[in-house]
Length: 200
Length: 205
Image (cartoon, rainbow over all chains, first blue to last red; front, side, top):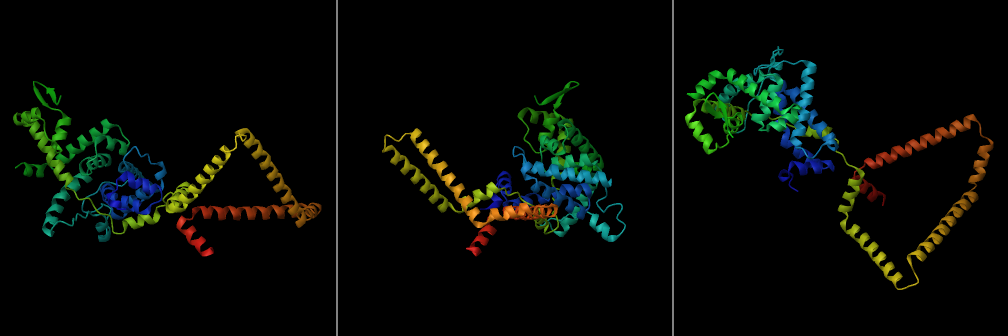
């Protein structure tokens, strides 16, 4: 059986029956989106990996509680979001720069908390430009409130509809719209200089 | 209606701005409005530009070996009935043979019964009841006889005669120990995968 061709729903059904390869395929399918969201919330590679891992483990260990009427990815994102928010609330971690966490005093710590923006398809020059541009954007995103940040990332990076974001974040639909509206406004303000360039 | 009223002008609704800004095609009326309205055109362009930049953000890859580390911690559920079902599916030929034998036996019995008009469901039930209880009683008697012959009653009688607090505690402790060990063994056996059980039975066999 080619697991990569199966739907999420089918892979969940197989995982529920103890099929490890199906579960592994689901991990491969969602490791990047989940890790990216978590990383952009905590801005620490090790911590992001721990939280993303916990999210997957909790998801699979409680598959019996999953309601198949909903999308598997929504459920996974919801668990990852809750774990991350819980962690942030406990640690009262503040939003930080793309160049590393403010509490990163050593070189090693700065490297661990800085953002790596690499893509297999990009040339070194492209990467440099992308890093500069994305660095500005990443800084702007990092400056957003954590709930605004999650909502805007789910909407624009992951392409999730408003209803699903409301479900993931467990907030009313109207609140999601408000968060995204305000997040866009704040991002526009933060990026106003580059917008001016783009308009020209 | 995709337009909202503001002062005298009719502008695009926030939903329409969102849809077009996120890359959706404008309807004819919306496209006409966009051609003439600088404000809406600016809103759509701003959102579109933001969408392009956000959508281009890299989906960061977790450190290598992430999936392995996740899978090492995952305990996938494997209910007993699913394992039994898997066993049936894995031995389709054997299951089919058992089912075919059962069907043949039932069909044969039914056709034999229909050959005797005096045999009715009532007579069959009373016959089965009579034979069944008779067999059961014979079984109980046999077990009793074996137990009596083995001297079990003599041992129990001797035990009862010597019964004191210490022997009672000892007997209870032994029972609890044996019971717990049996239960633990049973639980472990239930956790085993069908493949391990097959491997074990092949070695024993």
